[in-house]
Structure formats: structure tokens, C-alpha cells
Length: 159
Image 1 (cartoon, rainbow, N blue to C red):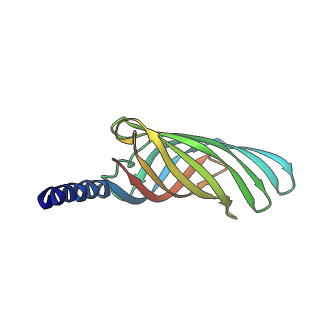
Image 2: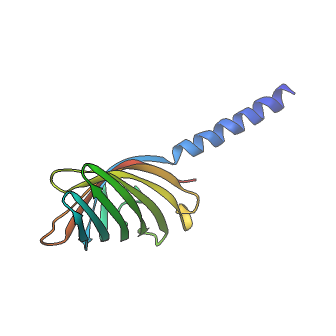
Image 3: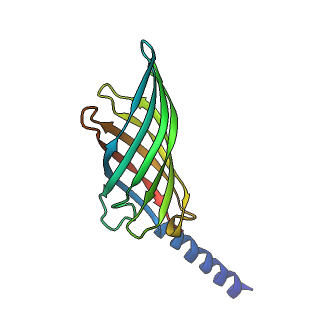
């Protein structure tokens, strides 16, 4: 009985170690082109249609599977005084051709126009099928050129 308990306990520790080994914390920046449409409702109140096509993410760890991801993000946001609500989705393709779906939620807009908020992984294909993860972002678009930089921080777990 003692040997069986130790064996199953060791198997459990090994399985837990493998799960933690696949957790990656990271930071980086995604670059792309943005097409935003602003609809003024009233003074200090606007609705925004948001669309960005990311040409690539540069992650601090070159081995991170998010490094080099490309794809579209889209959504809508309402800014009413200091309150920011809304959200959207992103569909990225990684260097291996696997796809990952992410959700983003805006939480604030800085004086310089940067939108800040949170993001989470909601599944995908290949290595991303049962992935999970979350983090924060700060996205700033140049209204004259459409160039966008999205700074991200977070963690991703791949099973």
C-alpha cells in the first residue's frame, strides 16, 4: 500500500511539474495598422469602432510562441467622461500556423489616447486549443498614420 501511494504521489508531482513548466510570463509589443472610426455622441461622449491588423509581435523571450504572431483585432468602445467600456476579439496566427483567439476589455483611456485594459486567451488550434492566459495591454495608435503599438504583459499556459 505504501509503495502504491508513493508511486501515485510521485506521478501527481510529475504531472503538476509539467503543467507549471508550460507557464510563460512575458512582455512585448505588437505592431500594426489601425483603422478607427470615432462617432461623437456629445461633448465628452464618443463611440469608437476599432480595427487593427497586427504585422507582428516582438516578445522579450524569442522562444515564446507569441513571438511573431500576426492577425486582426476588432471591437468597439464607448468613452463617456472618464468611463470606458466595450471590448473585442483578436485572432492571431503564430509562426507554426496555429491560431489563437483572444478577448480584450478596455478599462481606461490615457490623456495621450492610449487605451489600456486586460486580455485573455479563449482557445485556438494546435498548441492553443486548450491554452489559457491573461494579462494587460496599452495600445496607442497614431491618428495621422494609423501606425499602432500595443504593449502587452501577461502569462500564458500551454497544456
